Image 1 (cartoon, rainbow, N blue to C red):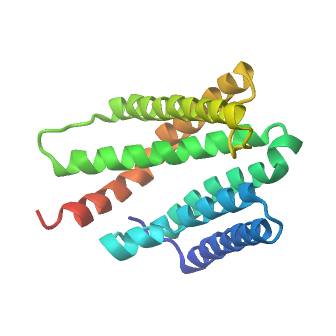
Image 2: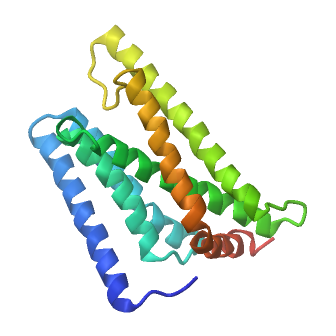
Image 3: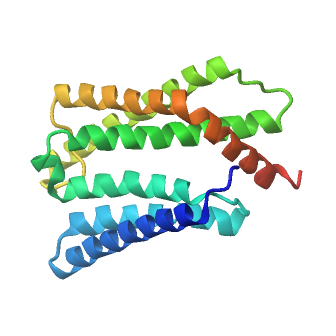
Length: 209
C-alpha cells in the first residue's frame, strides 16, 4: 500500500480523534440527561471507530489512517443525524446513506479480492467486480430497510422509541438510490486503492496456511 506523507497521516489521525471525542461527548450527554438514544447511537458508533485499531493489533493488519477516518466519518455522520440533523437538514440522510454504502462496498470488495488473491480456484474479473460491489450494497440496503421496518413494528407494539425508523416509501426508495451512488463511486474510483488493501489482508490472514 502506498505510504502517505507524515503530515497527512497526522491530520487524518487528528480528525479521527476529534470525531471520537465528539462521540464520547454525545454518550456523556446521554448519561447525564438520561437520553438512551444518545447513549446507544454514540456508544455503538464510538466502538466501531476502534475497529481498525483492533484489526491492526489482533491481526497485524497495517491499515492506513485513511481507512480509520473513512469508518469514523461514516458512523459520525449517522450519529449526528440521529442527534437532530436528520430532522433539520433534508439531505443529511442521503449523505449518510451514500457514505455508509461506500464503506460497505469497500469492505465487501476488499474481502472478495483477498479471497481471490488467496485461492487459485476463484477468479474475480475487474468488470465483474463492479457488478459485485453493486449487488453487495443493494443487498445490504434491503436488509437494512427490513431491519428498520422491524423496529417500526416493535415501536408500534411497545411504545418504545427506536433509534432507527422508516419515513415512508419515498424515503426508502431515496435511501436505496443513494446507497447505489455510494457503491458506484467505490466501484469506479476505489478499486485501485482497495486492491492494495486486499493484498495486505490476504498476506496477513492467510500467511500461516
